[in-house]
Image (cartoon, rainbow, N blue to C red; front, top):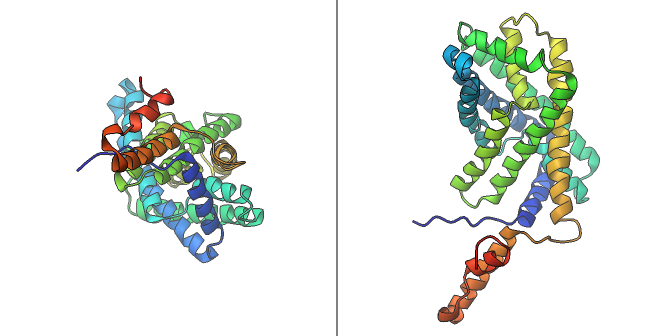
Length: 308
C-alpha cells in the first residue's frame, strides 16, 4: 500500500464545484428540502458533541482555550457526514450555486431559490433534533450540561455586537466552503475526510459563527429557558448577521474568488497543476526511456517547492 499526495488541481475542483452547483440548482425541490433537513440533523449531532465536550468546569476555569480546541477537534465529523452522504447545507450552497451562476450555467433565481429551500430545510432538521432528540430525550436537561448550553449560547448571542457576528460569519463560511473545496480535491475517502477536518477545526477553535450550527446552539438554550435569550434576539443576532456573513464568506471569498482565478479566461498556474503535469510527463518518459526520466521533483523545484 502506498501513500500519495496527488490531488485534483484547483481548476479541476472549481469545475467540479460548478457542475455540482448546476445539479443542486436543478434538483427537484422536495428532494432539496429533504436533503437539507438531513443536513440540519447531522450537523446538530456534531453541535451536541461539541457542547458535551465543552462541559468541564475545571477546563472552563483553568484552560478555556484548550477545551475549545479539543471540542473543535471532534466537531468536524458533522460536515464529514453531510458531505459524504450528499446532504445539502445552505452554507455550502452559497459556494456551489454561486459558481454555477457565475458560469451562466444556472439562472440566478434558481440559485436564490436553492438558498431559500436549503435554509428552511436546515432549520427544520435542526429544530427537530433540538425538540425531539435533545429536548424530549433530555440529553442536556440537567447540570452541568444545561449550564454549559446556556453559557455557550449567551456568549454567542448576548455578548457580541451585530457587526462582530457578521464578521465572524464571514470567517466561518470562508473556512466551511474551503472544507467543501478540499473534499472535492481529494481522490480517496481518507483524503476527503482530512480535507474537511482541518478548516472546520479552524472555524470552531476560533469561535466563528455558522448559521446552521446556531440553529442548534441557540434554540436549545431557549428550550432550556436561558434567561437572556429570546426568539426575537435569536433572529436578530443569531440568524440575520450570521446568514449575511456566511453568504459573503462562501459566495464571495471562496466561490467568486476561485471562479475568477481559475475559470474566468482560462486556467492559472498552480503548484498542484505543475505537480500533475510533472507526474504525467515523468510517467510518459519512464515508459519511453526509463534511464532519463525527469520525475516530479524537477517540476516542483521549478515552482520553488524544493531545492534543485
